[in-house]
Amino acid sequence: MVQRLSHEAKREQWGTKLGFVCAAMGSALGLGNIWRFPYIVGENGGGAFILVYLACIIICGLPIMLGELVIGRTAQSDAVGSFGKLAPKQIWSIGGLLGVLAGFFILSFYSVVAGWALKYLFSAVGGSLWEVDIANYGKFFGVFISEVWEPLIWQGAMMVATIIMVARGVKKGLEHWNRILIPILAILVLILAGYSMSLDGAVKGLTFLFAPDWAKLLEPEIYIIALGQAFFSLSIGMAVFITYGSYLAPNTRLPISAGAIATGDTVFAIVAGLAIFPAVFAFGLSPSAGPGLSFIVLPELFQTMPFGKIIGILFFLLLVFAALTSMASLLEVPVSFFMRVFDQGRSRTTLIVGFLIYAIGIPSSLGFGVLNDVKWGTKSIIDVMEFLTLNLALPIGGMITAFFVGWAWRDRPGSSVIGFKNQVLGVLWLWSLRIVAPITVFCVFLRSVGLI
Ligand code: PHE
Image (cartoon, rainbow, N blue to C red; front, side, top):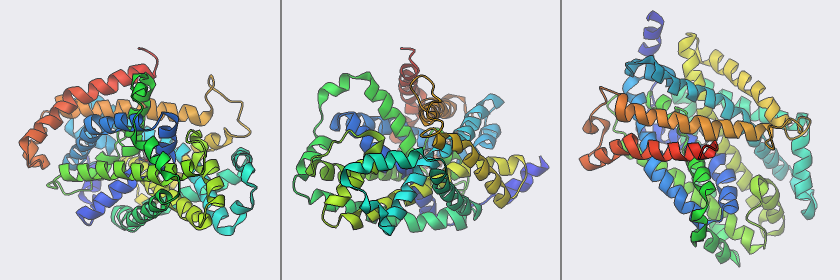
């Protein structure tokens, strides 16, 4: 109790509300928007998928994000401690614990892809990326990711940058860096989208993105993928917003911030799509290249298009910055928890947790090379990690938050205390958490584990 009090007395706080929104945006905008969203849209048929995705954001994503923020802001503690303080039964803390675990595992493989982006950025700046023969980018990528040391070094470099950012603390690290990087991300993605849409033949890309193929809506897979992507992209279901909410003053209004973060994340993903698809179609390439879209198809494109090398550098810079700001939030959730539990300082905790996560991430990287044969069915190590976190931990974490806020939290703050100006919205939010979000997530979850 004494330890807990000493930690809470000196709980860090955001300097400004804008700083908090930037940090939250930094968590949401990431590889999920720039690397994953476009290839998933490409594989799942474009416009129809985007509609399902938007529905998932509105009916599940946004309400759960707000739910997490309300928990954190009220409890003023980390992922696990917040449930512990507010809930009559300790069992709810499992929701927070799942978040801490998900943070560990997501960051362990996220950093692998972030490392690839860093390598591409350096090769683009140094010029070696442009010496590859245009037909050989697939091979170039395949050879690089199957090596033992090089990918591990780039992954380590991204982890070191993340550790430095988180070790500086909430205000001087997370807030400071996100306030600088978020505007840069916005400018970069707008330049790229503007350029891509100005190319001859760009219209085909726009049609692909915005003209839905309704038949696709009959495929159940689309719903699973869209919901998983919505959770991942918004960073919900793993207590990022509980943790970030806990650094807010207890009277901060929340709905507008949550709306701004969810809207910003969605708009950003679509603009990233506008940066990629018009160019892909303009050069007659395939939109359904899968995870290699950013690392194989795009470099090919950059090498052929006018100003391509500069555009390529800007693109990989965007990818690296976006990844870094998300990685910081993935690390912050476990760091914040372990600081309290072990009553240790921030720097030391960040260093130890960061190092452990890096170690856990090593097999994910090696899974593309020496550990290629380690498979679960047809899934590689990174696929298994992705499945366990995106399809299991995040939806379950989100459902726990929805149930807790909707049904179990006896002293839940009233909607005006949460900051709703319009009471109807407050009621809609509550019923979404009570019924709509849990049922949707549950059905999709059953389907994704093969039970329906
Ligand atoms: N939202 C991040 C992205 O889109 C990933 C992330 C997931 C970050 C969960 C934190 C928590 O890349």
